[in-house]
Length: 180
Image (cartoon, rainbow, N blue to C red; front, side, top):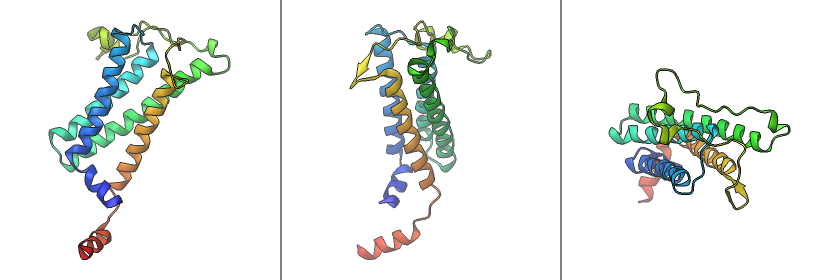
């Protein structure tokens, strides 16, 4: 089974699934923002940036499915999913932590000066919302909590798939060929 998953992770289909999941999350975020009127806060924008980084991470191996490109994809995926998990956890702590009203929430994203995404693409990276707003609920979890779950899943799947890249299944392959 692990051998099959390892081989699947080398295929373009695996990276397409990752790409489609990230593009679906980005589309949902834009739907919530522009159709439902839920304005993203600074923490939401940082999480959105992590989702876009995962989207780019999946796109890299789709350009050329070589070991080097998959390695770049894994590096971006791992970094973005862990960073997204950290930001979503911080956002949840802002909402529900003790003395959360003392935690400041910035008004403007802190992107590098050479890449002010919030100025270049304000509809995508602008943060007019409030970090303390938690009106949207689904199965009694708010947006920050769902993003924490999503980034935890991204991180766990990344760790599992990345570890599989370095395990040799040569014995299983031999056994598999003998059975057939």
